[in-house]
Each structure stands twice: as structure tokens, then as C-alpha cells.
Length: 261
Length: 243
Image (cartoon, rainbow over all chains, first blue to last red; front, side, top):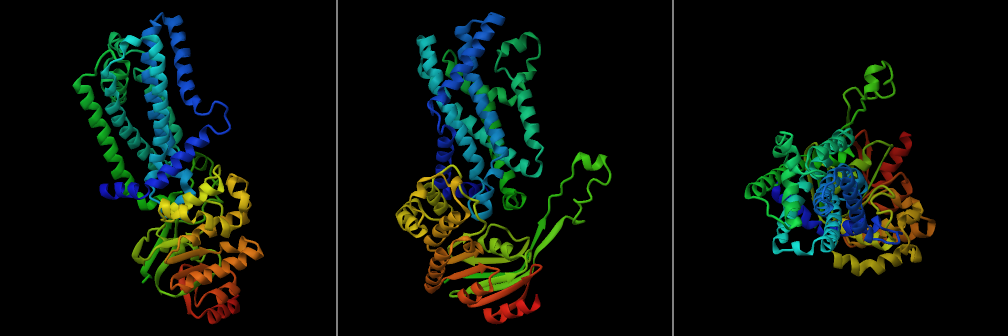
């Protein structure tokens, strides 16, 4: 099953590349600034949110904007992938009903497109950081690379699940959107984890898988510290279970997909 | 050596029934939605069929007889519910129109993508691009996003790609009819050429003329079963008498 999954991806790797390429071009077609929007959007958003928080709650903007930025964009990658997954097969109906293309490439297609946008936003992050705090740059920041790989597998797992579930239960898409919105507020993204601790509800993030996955990308990106080993391990275990579980889930239903479109 | 072999093959569709909260709360609101009690459709019923090299098979029958389903099953798109399906050979197929295209992409990009989906390699399809473009006669339209294409133009594009990848087994579903007269003639010629190099073709059609002219074997399907199997002249005659 596992072998079949990866063999299928390998066989259709050129199709996948071509589809991803099309999606990326389509996204910024006929826009003057084009791909620059991929950098400008997260940059602008972080500055707006950072300023609001600075004025309302009196947080230190210089510290808070990088924190917000480094957490918000990986989060948008996760939720974008899960949400994009719901339409992955539905949008590929023409291909799945006409050719024997391997269905598993379609969730990957959405995740890769979202991932490339994440990479652009990280580029924007480091540009911004250069102006805010050039002294904080260090080799430890490179630790966000393995973090991103773990995060990618996790997001792909979510997309695999949502793509298959949404075929049977079309209500899943709006439900998932609501659920992710809830998790967004329950996870320390727009506020520090320490704030939950002060209120005595640290369990909210300690038992939250999303927290660990964000942490292994966010902390190295900020450059000031390295996440502890147990955070790394938790994130890796959560990610691998989700990923391999989703492969099993998807491949078991592989031959039924075309009938449900 | 290519072959299509189907043994005791069944395909049962599970129809997804729409049941909404409205239907539970308001009695009688489902009266148009209840078409089948158990929600299944027996699309192919205990089918046995063998098609060998050099055979050009026409599949005829009424709408909903299971012709297109048969074609998709041979292509490997539908998995049989039970029974044996052996298909040996490189398949190229063409089913519905105007699906399986990237609407925002140009004709060129779609030729490339479709070629890949039909199992060609990137180098393989790139080397055939000009030939495909020439055969389709779409000219400058190929630089345009395909969302502006007419159905005839889609047929030209799809047919040109499907037949350019040199398959062992060619599966066609009635589509050629949407092309104009000149293209139809050209398409017929190409189909003859393809069969000449000892390959299999399966053509689903409602045109008895096409069945007789292009094929050397014909099956008549009804409710997922093969009613008659033989030379096109005889089978089409029997079919027409039946109407």
C-alpha cells in the first residue's frame, strides 16, 4: 500500500509538476505585482496586526511582529492545505474520470502550492527581520528547515484525510473551516504561550498537536532560542502518524474515489 | 500482442442519495428523489468479452446500456465490483468532451498535460507537440486559454493528442461526431491507420454507419449485458429492426 502510494507519485511526477506550475501561474495572472503579492500579503498583515497589538495591549512591537509572523504563516499553510484538500479530488474530476492518473497526486498538488507560498512568506519574514533586528541572525535559524519538512508531511496528511472525507460527507468542508478557526484561537499564534500559563490553562497548548508543529518552525525562525528535544520529538511523531495514517486511509479508498465524484 | 479480457465481470454503482435535514423534517419533500430503493445500479452484469489484436470493436445500444461504463472499465478508470479484468497494452482514451483540461492554460500546455496523463514521457510528448498541433489545425488558437474554445475545438485537441501517443489500445466514446466534416474525414483516416498497425480499437457509437464502416466486430449492449456479438452489418441490422 505504502509502496503503491509512492510509486504512483513517482510515475506521475511530471504531471504533478505541471499542475503545480499551472496553479502558481494562475494565482497571479493579470496582476501587476504578480508573485510579489506572495511576499507583500504576509508582510502587510503582520505589520497591521503587530501595530494593533502594540497600541491595544502595549506589547513590544519589535519582538511581537516576528513572533506573530513566524507563527501566522505556518498556520496559514496548515489550514490552507487542509482546506484545499477538500476540493482536491472534486476539482480533478475531469482527469480522474478520463485518465488513469494516480489520484494521490491531487492532495499533494494543493499542499505544494501552499508550501511554495509559505516559502515566499518566510523570505519576506527574513527581509523584515533584517530591518528590525539584524543582530539576531544565527546558524540556528537553519533548524527551521527540518521543521518545515515535518510540517509539510503533517499538512499533507491533513489534506489526504480531508480530500477523502469530503467525498463522502460534503458537510465536512464548512465543518473543518469552523474547526480550524477554533483551533486557531486555542493555539498560541496571535498570543504567547505564556499567557495561557498565567491563566492556568497551559493544557490547552500542551495537549494541542498544532502547537508543537508550529513551534519547531516558529522558534528557529525567530533565532533567539532552539525548541527543546521533547517538542521536536512530539512534532515528528504527530506528523508521521498523521502522514502514514492518511496514506493508509486514502489508498484503502483509492478505487472508490472515481465513483464518488 | 495486446488483449482485452473480461470474465464474469460485474460493476455495481452505489448511488449517493441526497438526504438532507429538510427531507426528514418535511414529509413528502423527497418524492422526486427516491428513484431507486436500494440505491444501487447494476451497470455491468456478468460480462464476458475478449478482444484481440486487429479487432475494431463497435459498441452499440440505447442510452444507459452500459457502453461508456464498459469503456471506462477497460481503461482502468473504474474498478470492477467483482470478476476478472485483464488488459494488456498501452491504452489511450477519449471520453467526455471538455473535461480534463486546465481551462486557464493555453492549448499547448494542455497538449503537454494531456499527453502526460495518457502515459507519455515529457520528452515523448514534447517531440510530438508540433505534429499534434498540425493535425488539430488549431493554429494560433493554441496560444489562447482553452476556456475560449468551442466544443469542436476541444474535440480536435483531445482527439489529436489521444491518437498521437501511439497506443496499443484506443478507446473512443462517440466524441468524434462533434468535429466538422473535414476533421471527421481526417479523424476516420487516422483511426484506420491506427488499426492498420495491428492495434485494438473500441468505439462506442450511435452511428450505425460508423460501426459498419470503421469496425470489424460489433456488440449490442442492453442493461449491462451483451445482447448480440458479431459482424457489424448483422448486429446493426438486428439493432435497427428492434427499435
